[in-house]
Length: 489
Image (cartoon, rainbow, N blue to C red; front, side, top):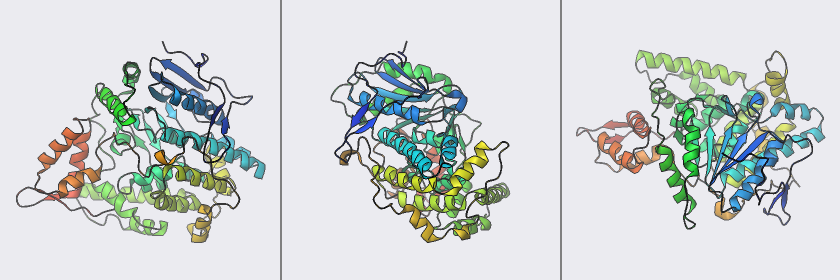
């Protein structure tokens, strides 16, 4: 049986120190009043597990939890006995539903001192997220249940992310007057087409296998299999000379042993005509242009059923955007445009600056109070209340670093792991891979499917992904050979 958190690792101490870009070490230690049971740490042969243990709060992340997790990961990175790190959530409902924003909003009412305390929490959270994104050991997130906001930061930067039939993914920050943080500036713009911008602005939820299809998860298995998978991963024994990529490939093959198939009653949601409409509408540079594009949908009549579906989607999306914080919408769109060029360290440092601006902005406290604190929930009163009240200068000011403020210091921060693209691709094949093969010319759809299936070891979901991309992006010439016809989003 795994060892519980109360049994200390010999190498573990409650205070962790690591050098960042400055000379003094960063110290993370537990504080009086921290709940000793809000995170459980297990050891099972070579596996080390982190279980978020606030099921009554949907495992929402707080500072007490982060102060426990950071030192553990730092110590496990050094340990020859720790082969694989796995993070999960207690109970059947949630992996992690987000950060404890209600406490932060109430804290902000204390003025600058309260806002500074809230910003300190975000600094700790982002340090943890960056540590996960640059972890030197294989890190796996079990996205079993609600995975939103802060829970996204604990999962999407992992090289292996497992969705289940209970997964519910969303970045709901614009609904509470905030911005898609926890590395959303990095993760979302790197999704295919304009999916990231769409998810950032609308907070659209993706359930179950659709988190896998969209590239948010790298694997999909049934939740009932997770305990057996953990046991199997504990049996893996890596060689000292094997690098991280080799170890991840072994884990990827091991997960394939537990393939339970994909649900037949959950079609690919962000696909076909809907995906085309998302890319058409959300490719624009301003919120006003996005709104105007949505008002024109459907611009390409298809079948009656598809036309009606796109029209319904466009009206629903327009209604959704009208309910969001105007400041949050403008910031989130600008974030998607800028973040594509940020490296992973700069992402969290920039977001930390931005979080500080939002702690002093009225929309965050108002949005959280209206949605989560007041009973019953009310409609937030945004300030400014319309897009016209938020100028381009206002938004550029939100992204402008504050003078005299030190950048957030990070663990594992070195040129070697400060990447511009995620270093490992273990999920479904990306569209650019499929496009490259089609553009080489001389291939039928069957040949493309067979070649990519072989390359991805017949991974579950690969065929469905290829077929959707080919149908949406290609046509056939007179000889039945594929021609790439899609325009870049």
